[in-house]
Length: 254
Image (cartoon, rainbow, N blue to C red; front, top):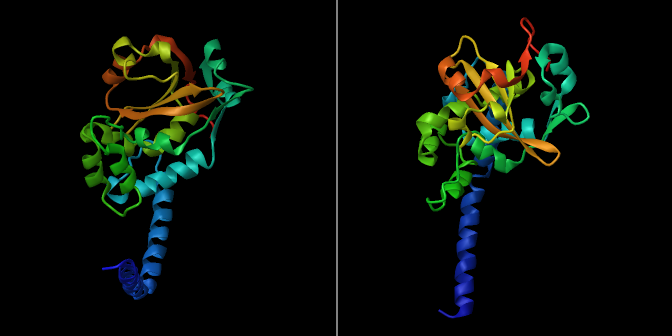
């Protein structure tokens, strides 16, 4: 086959597939409309699910979680105002030092998202993160995908269940610690500079933890996970080193 014949063959094949796709243009438009409506509903479901409620993983997929993260952490950056903690709790001088001009700015990027839901870039597995990123935009089962993308899925799946608690915990913590409160055996893997801990009542878990890491003048969300028991919580943090404690009877300000 010469070059001209090969070119004509390719063009005929393209026309064939174009014709095939044209037959489904109406169905494709309807399906996309339904998917957009579903994603909008799921995002609102995540927004409305705060501690002590747990996200129903059967309702979710990676795409819905990513869109929620984009709208609440990237498109709109989070700002924590010192005056809210000042009026609602007891605080140490070192806590004040984390605020610049009376506020903490939290700047997130898309590449922060995988880690927060427990997806780690396993260097020894070829294409590990690529496979996860490719799966984000498909309508698949989160539970099946998560098991495929995370070797420790039984442990880390709890991060997704508590994903909608992040903002609530940052705005209304029970305690705040700096990194000096992290007990030695935990400090190897827990690298946050500022740790917000919220007591969770009437739930499977007792505490929710959000860790912030300082990068330049801003912070990023480094960690998100729930803790099941009080014993585990006290095993991770030295309560005597808390730098903020919410006053009894107050719920904080959003």
